[in-house]
Length: 188
Image 1: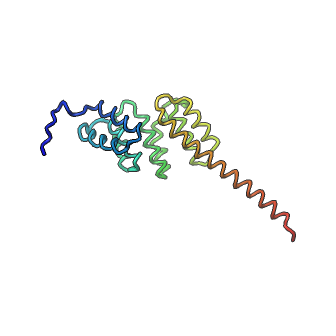
Image 2: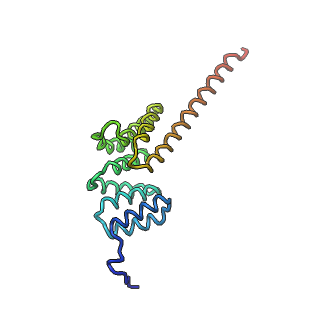
Image 3: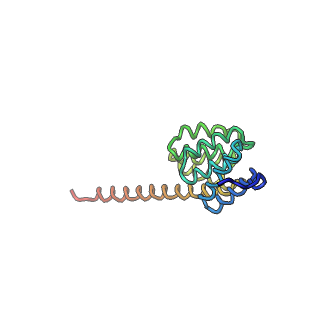
């Protein structure tokens, strides 16, 4: 079948960005993925569409494709910092901590209190089992982040994980202390 749509029926880059963002916000990964694929065919050089596409692929668990698109986008985005953060996060969650750190070095020129730097500091502290420092840094990032509110939701989930880990560690310590007391009171 021949596609009879005229060129004026084709979505432009801005329309694709808005539609993809709309479906991401609606948690409709299927539609966001369809639009991502169409947009990258229509606008293969668009760094912003590659960035959005990277987030869509990350959301559906296709991390290699997400890393590829984010890597391609970073060098040509006007403001690559969010993409740099996301790419580092993908490496971190894949267990590639050293690569995440290398990627996040590109954020070192941001002010120390910039929300992305705070999130990086918090996540780095978390993987080093410094949960108190992680919590403080992530909370600071959330409090200063007005640019990417959706990222705050993800970071709040990380705070919940930190709380669960520290609660489990505290419970294990309490159990260990109670058992050691019991052992010391056993008759010989």
